[in-house]
Image (cartoon, rainbow, N blue to C red; front, side, top):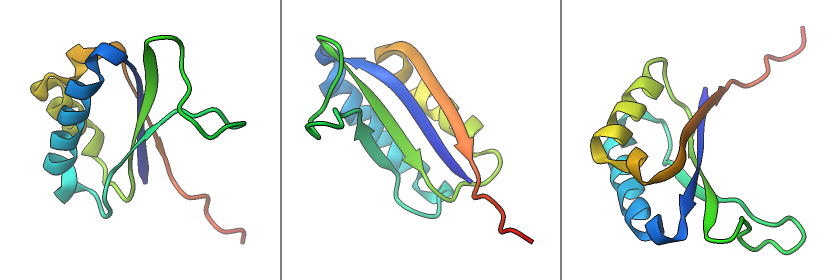
Amino acid sequence: MHCYVYYRVAATQASAARALVETLFARMATASSAAARLQIRCDPATGKPAGVAGEATWMEHYPGISPGFVEQLERQAAHLGLTSLLEGGRHVECFCDVPPCA
């Protein structure tokens, strides 16, 4: 199972949010089978970061997670104060690989 978390970050909060995300990644490292990744929305035509003036959409990606991971992740994000730096909160979605055809 893979977990994706996306949210908006104001430019004025980007540095503080980045530091907290790195701390969050370190705390969650033992609960995922591979290193977490942080990505930013980009313009498909230019490949450069895109967003409305003064904010950007970020996405955390956690591959190879187990049941219960999301609850632990969100507790840690709140405990660190990350959620208070965001515009509109964190949105979590999980995906599994499609099973092979029979």
